[in-house]
Every structure is written in structure tokens, then in C-alpha cells.
Image 1 (cartoon, rainbow, N blue to C red):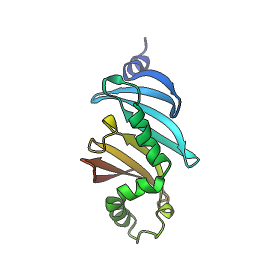
Image 2 (cartoon, rainbow, N blue to C red; image 1 turned 90 degrees about the horizontal axis):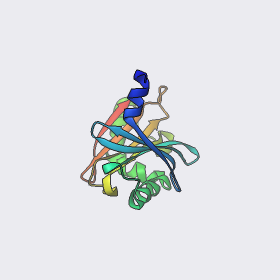
Image 3 (cartoon, one colour; image 1 turned 60 degrees about the horizontal axis):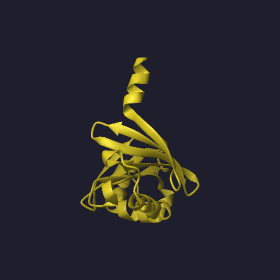
Image 4 (cartoon, rainbow, N blue to C red; image 1 turned 135 degrees about the horizontal axis):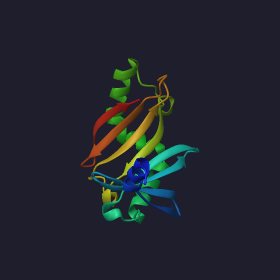
Length: 152
């Protein structure tokens, strides 16, 4: 077996076809496993990762957690807003627009263990005002936004 096959085989688990999420791939990481799903939200590409303790399939509660935000991207923004707006203004050096969709596109999220918002999770937004379209990822801990990381 080649090195790449060995690496991929050790990190990737099984695939499932979920009735709501579609095709999901189990990823085994150093700190545990998670399901990775490429789907659509508001007719645009969207990535969701779902924590998988003991490599369990996504629970109904985790699917409902994802759907709550997927069906209402404004809810996702409102949760991240306390830290996201300040980071946007610092990064772009201009005021945040009155309509958040003129600044960001909701592109990814993670779903915490047991769909419990007190466990760590994230919401990611692509900055559409930035030429490089940097990704602003808001981390949540103990139910509240705790930090923003800018990638890209």
C-alpha cells in the first residue's frame, strides 16, 4: 500500500448516506472523529462538520441543530455578531454595512457533541467585501462567542 493510501485510509472512515444531510464522510482526527458533509444552504455550497463521539452517526438532535441555522442564516450571524462586526471593521478598516449579507456569506459550521451549545462549536462566514474573500470563523464555548479567527 502506498503512503498516501495509508494516510487517507487511516484518517477517513466510512461513508453514509443520511436522509437529511446527504453523503457524509467520517473523519478520524487526533482529538476524535467527526462527520464532514458538503451540502447547500440558501442554494450555495456549504460545509458542515458534526462531532462524532465513538464514531456514532449524526444524532437527530445534531441534525436539528444544523437545520436550525441552515434554514435561518440570519440566526447564525446574530449569534456571531458580537465579535464578528468588530473583527470585520478592524480587518477592512471601514464601517460594517447595515445589512450583514452585504459583508458576509454563511458558508460553514460545526455541530457540537450532543448538539449542546455549551460544548465547543463554530460558525464560518466568507467576507464578500474582501478581495481574497477571507473566512471569518467564530468559535463558541459555554454557549457564547469566544473568538474569531480569520483565514485565507
